[in-house]
Image 1 (cartoon, rainbow, N blue to C red):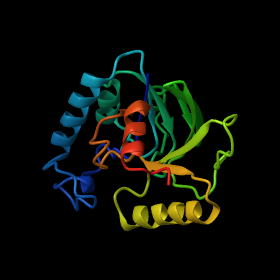
Image 2 (image 1 turned 90 degrees about the horizontal axis):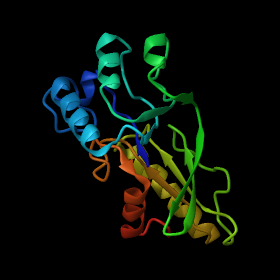
Image 3 (image 1 turned 180 degrees about the horizontal axis):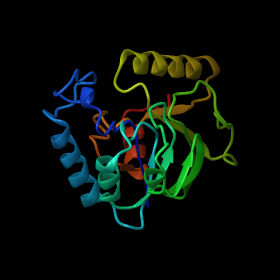
Image 4 (image 1 turned 120 degrees about the vertical axis):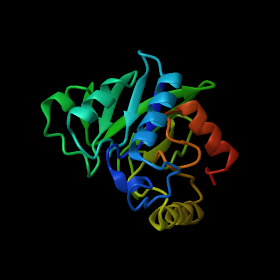
Length: 202
């Protein structure tokens, strides 16, 4: 099964209460955050699962981050973010692929979905507007903006685009701090349930 998550910022103390905690994570220390992520990850992920990490995985690429990433189950695919330096060969070797952009096909209840994976929220993407049943529903998964005002502005643009053209397109932030991600990779089935519950197709 495929899973998706973004912006874990491992070893970046400013995402917890040790530092500035700029996206209001509930962790007092980096050790607490890493322990919680590892526990959830390894409870939900199997060794043969594929996890698509949409950028900004580890702030540092040192022995500690290598040991941490090595301890996480599954086949890890890294879609490169602005904080992924990727200069350490031992760290790079932990991923089955490293790419700036990825397209993935998912099927749920006999419906095909074409996922556009990018660290950054983009305004327009491949097959953005599904015009007929021959084209799978296309959904853009992204990170980068965390739970900031930029996320609100971007989603407002997507809504304006849908209202203007009356052809829905869907974009979903899979940043780990979003409440429907909650610091654990989520399956597309679960992401789709969130999309449908919150009527993001309109």
